[in-house]
Length: 165
Image (cartoon, rainbow, N blue to C red; front, side, top):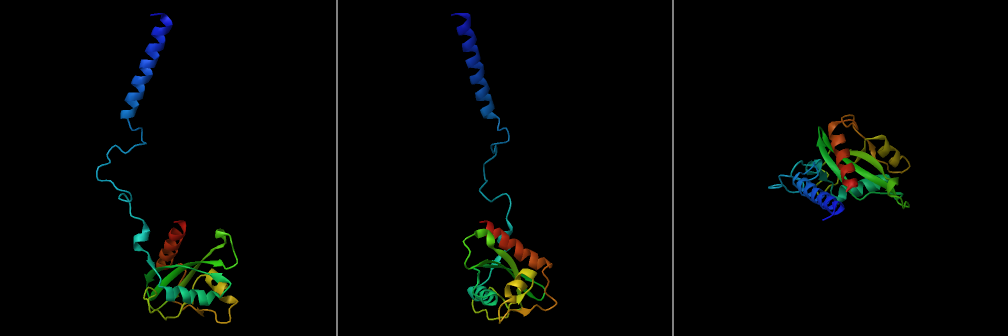
């Protein structure tokens, strides 16, 4: 065997050995302990705590914003004095998914109930602006409701998470 062949064989052998040894080391890219692990097992998302408003409650938001805006779903979080609803509204003539605006609403009736017939209050500025040009705009929210409350923020977080799916 020539020196060139010996060198090539040695390099090929070293490369093979290095490849085999690195296959045993996860290098941070592999799960070295996969037993008992399932997708979503490590950390629960907030969506487990997110309720969804009934179609009647979503329709009430739709009525409040009028025919120029649409909404399909509203996330709900219960707080002191009632429930907060976070809904993404989109201009009905828009083809751009980025045209949506997040609105925060409140009610003293359970919005998850299928027979919901409560009053919807516009809480954040975006909801107030969305109803400003409607003849039957949403009533002003009682002072106990605030867009900065923990429940409003939970509902908002749920709506953002739902939109990201």
